Length: 226
Image (cartoon, rainbow, N blue to C red; front, side):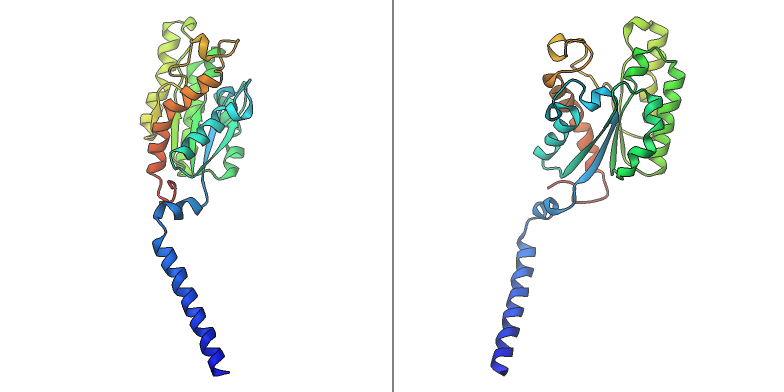
């Protein structure tokens, strides 16, 4: 009986030792990969929602794949609503934050410009969104937009100034133009000339990715990158 108890105790000790050895031997990246992915909320309009594209070719799906290809354990939540303005994004922010994201990309304003909405209103809405995210201490990347040139110089100057000024006010990183390298290029857009095709979305993701990974690298948790 004592012999059996000794064998059982020895086996338990050996198993515990092997488990500890395995834990020490596993690279830090492997431990990170086993952790819960960081949740990134993409708050936007049709450009974020993936209008006119299969789900796998939309902005959020491609962004998630690009992050994972670089070793970031991330889930990108698609909070894009086609046709949405900054007012719409502001109105549904609380609902969107119910997913408890650990980072947010704010990509709103394209429809404000297309509809010629007063830049003062656009600024007020984006200001309120950024103020809420700052109050909640949610790290944020602001994706900028440029006004359509047909609205005139004065409108363009007032609209285009919104994003850098608010980024400075709330000390958040700014990606100056969400459609950088894609806007007005017929080969990169769908037939309507406004919404990117799959190739255009790939360029958008490549452009914003370094700005987003910089934000993720600054997150307090240490298991974002595997």
